[in-house]
Length: 136
Image (cartoon, rainbow, N blue to C red; front, side, top):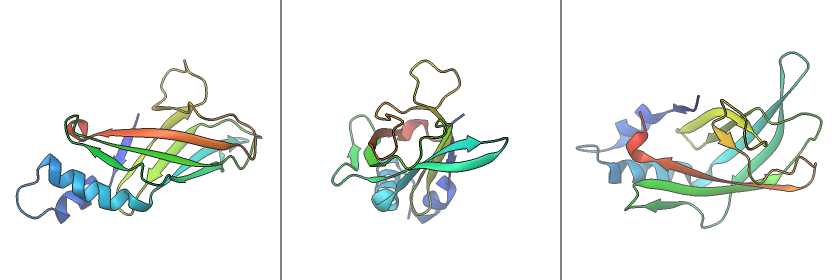
């Protein structure tokens, strides 16, 4: 299940009444230099980094009408000896973690890696949407 981390820390930075617009401003500032790490597993529990994606230029936007934050990350696939299992998108204080898969119909995944070829050296791209109304 997708987990959100650091939301209370961000809300504590908001002066006055915390509105969705103020939360969006804090998230935009926090995610301006975010990274998305894709993890796989070797052996029983040896978690390894298989891709490290960084924020694409000018892709971090606040969609005011939909009240969500959109962003895109991209980076090289570092390893091809295991499948993607989990991810962590992390800003300075805020992070999202969960299960992922490069296969479209896998049960229990929080993120479908649509732009993931599985070949080392290829560039993986991923879009994220953070719906502010649904944040815990």
